[in-house]
Length: 380
Ligand SMILES: Cc1cc2nc3c(=O)[nH]c(=O)nc-3n(C[C@H](O)[C@H](O)[C@H](O)COP(=O)(O)OP(=O)(O)OC[C@H]3O[C@@H](n4cnc5c(N)ncnc54)[C@H](O)[C@@H]3O)c2cc1C
Image (cartoon, rainbow, N blue to C red; front, side):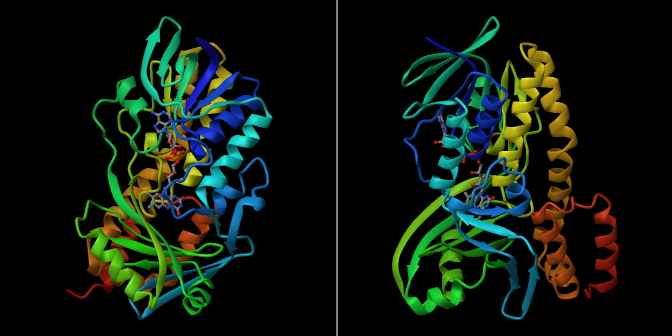
C-alpha cells in the first residue's frame, strides 16, 4: 500500500490547484486521476480574471486568446459592451490548461497516478484507505476533486445530492474563414438564446466553442435550442463539429463539505456560480483554501475540517447564496429579464464584469433594490 499525507482524487483545476498548494506547504501529496493526461474536459474554457489574477504562476503559455472586452446580447436589439485594461476572460483548452497546473505541482513534488480510478474509500482509524484500479492507497486526508458526478462524495457519505445540476452543451465547431473572421473578434454571451439560460460563442485558436446552458432547470429541448443558436449566429457552413454535453452544479451542497477526513472542492462541492455557471475560478480557489486549511492543521483533522468549513462559509458561500437569489429572479421570468436588460443592461453588464474581474463581490443588499426598480419599470 502506498502512503501519502493527502490523496487528491481528480486532476481538474480544483484538484490540481489543491495538490500544488499542498506540495508547496511540504505535504506528501498524490493526485489519483482516472484518465490519462492531458484529458479532454467539456467546457467553454472561459477563465475569468478573478481566477487568473490569483494564479500562483503565469499561465500565458496555455491561453488561446484573451479578451479585454465582452459583448452581452439579448435578442437582436439589445447589445452591451464592457471593457477593462486587463483580460476579462482568457480562453483556454481545458486539457492543456489543467495539465499545466498538474505539471507545476509535480515540479514541487506532487505524485501523479494516471489511469487510476478510485472505486472505494474507507476510514480506518486515523487514515483513509482508497481502493483504486491501480491498487491500494492510504492517506491522512482525501480531497474529492472528482467533478460534478463525484463518486468519492457518495462513497464518503454524501448519499443524497443537495446540489442543483443543470445541463449544458458545448460544441467545438470549425467554420469557414468568413464566419471565423466575423465571430472571432468578440467573446459573446446571448441571454435568452435558450429559455431561462444563455448561449455563448467563444473563439479559440482555430475553431469556435459554442454552447448553451439551461440555468434554472433541466430542459429536454436543449439540443434544439443549441441548433437554433448556431443559426441565430448566422453560421453558414460547418466544416466540422464535435458535440459534447455535461452537467454543471449551480448550487452548493447544503450538508457540509467535510466528512471523515474527506474534503469536497470544486464541482464536487457545487461551487460554480449560480448566475453564470462559471466554475473554474472557484474550483481553483477552493483547492487553495482546502490546502491551506490542511497545512495549517497538520495532524489535527478536526481543526482541518473546522478551518476549511469556516473559510468556505465566509468566502465562497456568501457569494454563491447571493448569486443563487439573483439567478432565481433573473431566469424565472422573461418579463423581468427583459425589463432589467432594457432599462439597466449596461449597468448589469458592468456589474457582472466587475465580479468577473474580482474587483467587486456580489452586492448583498441588491435584491430589495432590484425589486423596487422592477416595480417602477414593469408594465403589466
Ligand atoms: C458545457 C460546459 C461549459 C462550461 N464552460 C465554462 C467556462 O467557460 N468557464 C468556467 O469557468 N466554467 C465552465 N464550466 C464549468 C467548469 O467546467 C467546471 O466548474 C470545472 O471543470 C470544475 O472543475 P473540477 O476540478 O471541480 O472538476 P473537473 O474539471 O470535472 O475534474 C474532475 C476530474 O476528476 C476525474 N475523476 C472523476 N472521477 C474519478 C475517480 N473515481 N477516480 C479518479 N479520478 C476521477 C475526472 O477524470 C476529472 O479529470 C463549464 C461546464 C460545462 C459542462
